[in-house]
Length: 304
Image 1 (cartoon, helix red, strand yellow):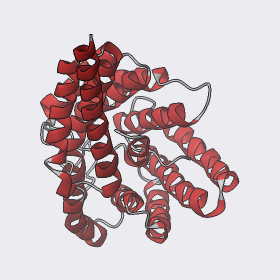
Image 2 (cartoon, helix red, strand yellow):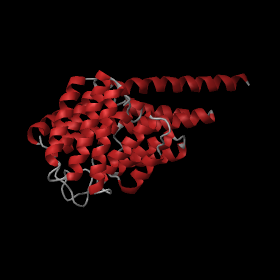
Image 3 (cartoon, helix red, strand yellow):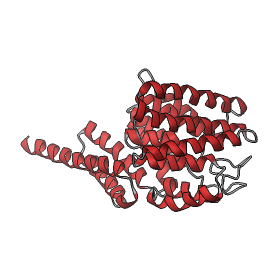
Image 4 (tube, rainbow, N blue to C red):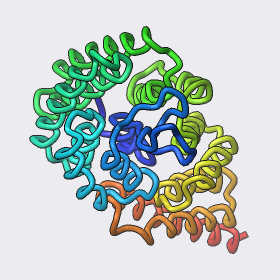
């Protein structure tokens, strides 16, 4: 398991741990981020934490609702999974270990009444524990955990293969594997996202990442724009759009497109205070590299 995230490799990892956010459409139970039909009551504080992190891109702001979720919604495995994943952004390995276990305990309890979500978060809990073991014990121990991850994914899929929460999470896991394993492709993630996953803005974000990695930049740009249409306040969406524009601009040696990339990077950096350091650091590096590329193209044009 690599240290990856969505707009960077490390971003893919964190999203692979969670793959979770809130739908902007109305639901039978407002606290279910994923389903309009057969909604589950996931909990208002857990929902609040989701909104803060994934709709607004404000990691620091999620701490208070997560404290409330742990106290008042302790049987919800998603709250513990989110807490562990935020600890990952800080490389707080012992906290990851604690909340991976809490995720597993809550998921095991939930399995009796909701086998889809119970097995789903058993998979997520083992994934989190695998991240801890990878850091502390190496790849062999993590691979053993990965076997349990897929065992519980399969069990959840046997119950309801079209469940939107399951397909969102498995789609991001497909992306993670495509980044880290040879002979894997993001195509499977795209198909899963398009078929059954929800909510739409996180689906479109995942599709944008997949097309970016496939070097299908026009399709990637269209998908990230859809994500921005629904969630325009999340700075990570501007970061991702900037990355895609930068790749197009470099490929075409196009100063205007590179300047558009810089503009989107700037919108992301305007909200630097709410982003973790591991996102801000590569964002600033890519901004600098984009400026350098623009200067390089201008110098080459002047020399002609």
